[in-house]
Length: 147
Image (cartoon, rainbow, N blue to C red):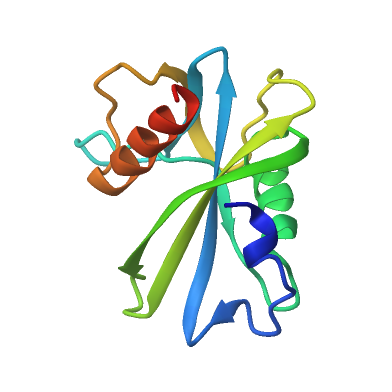
């Protein structure tokens, strides 16, 4: 399944009353790029995939390209497979669907962070410090890559 299924411009940045976010899987020879949010507490935050909220008047591809550039400084050159999605409630209690896609980038370095404490290139085989939802997305990605 490709991004074209999802890629109309969304007048309100949502579909059927559900806000959309996108996540990008960037693969560097079997390692995926994960970002660690800033934290001031004693518990290490879970790692996340680069991404963005789909804004009003923006397409899914546009949000992917913008989100990866803003969060990592990397330039998306292609959007591949739709890997999967999951639903959750935002901190404000609104329904959100997060769509995940494998993307290609012009170069995997340098990674320039704008809103995160650090980044890691993590092997898909590692026991990753991610949410169970992201773990499921990465398991699906691993299955797609190793077909």
